[in-house]
Image (cartoon, rainbow, N blue to C red; front, side):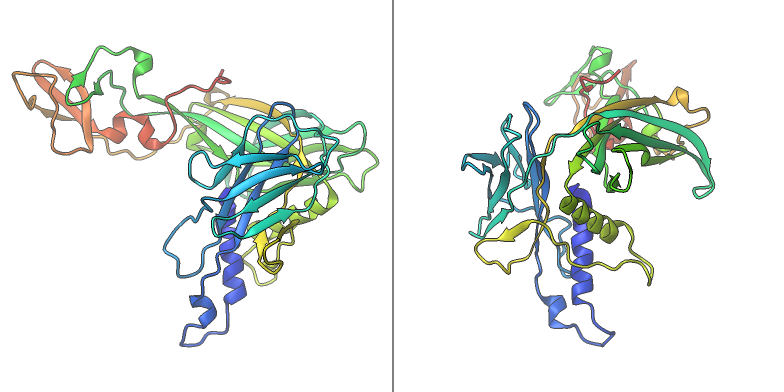
Length: 387
């Protein structure tokens, strides 16, 4: 969920420092207000990893777009005192544990020590085990609010023990996309290598994105712990993600009432802003506290739980008439080989171009972004789950 934190925290800073219009800059606006945000949960599922993203809010005068918290010492600690370290493997503020099977009958907390030496700790969290997701289904409907067809995705679940009551969902969406041209040539070090097999081209890629909205549900007022047809996504007609094949992995997190209240506040602050009478940004009281300085602000809530998962696939052939038609600028240029004595030698001065085809003593070239789908994002590696 880290994608929306920059927006939420920046908005919090804006509202906390805003004053009436005056022709001077208040000192509060000039001041740095980099509040630490901790996002993640302690995973008590069998053979799973726990992951936390540590970032800082941005002040109004910052030119950066992201401010990860680097060099921190992060660990999960059980109530019995056993510690499990998390490591920032990629140097981007994402701290990950080894594969663990934590005892769901014990309580756990998160401990963080920043590179500057400030210490933070969460309250001990009692683990909750997720009920399985019963089903994820989708429907194609006309939606007047969008003025077009949409695909709505719904989740259904229940807890026979009536112990969950409070739910949160997010999802990972993976989609297949292609470059405008398909080339069987690839640039090697100082030369061109040809004769590659089809699956070695850079024509087909797979991209994965994490949902940015917060989806919550509660059965506290119901006689049974059943959630039915909770909408977790809306995809509008001609979304490029649905041009070929699309997959969504819906994830379900059981919450306690305090965690539900926290995420409800985050949802209101991040998704309901804009109007004069909308709920305005406020404090986000979580369960993480400053140890070095109890007044040191920190945003986040640490839960301990297992998660339920269910995956669906949607193919473009299931969506009649759906196809994006993006404008592309992919001209083909014909040039002679840079070195007629060595036709596989490549030193074209404009590095934005790449070889598309070679034939009859001439090279056909186009922009790299038209030939290599990785310039759209994603990877050439087909996911293991892909159908």
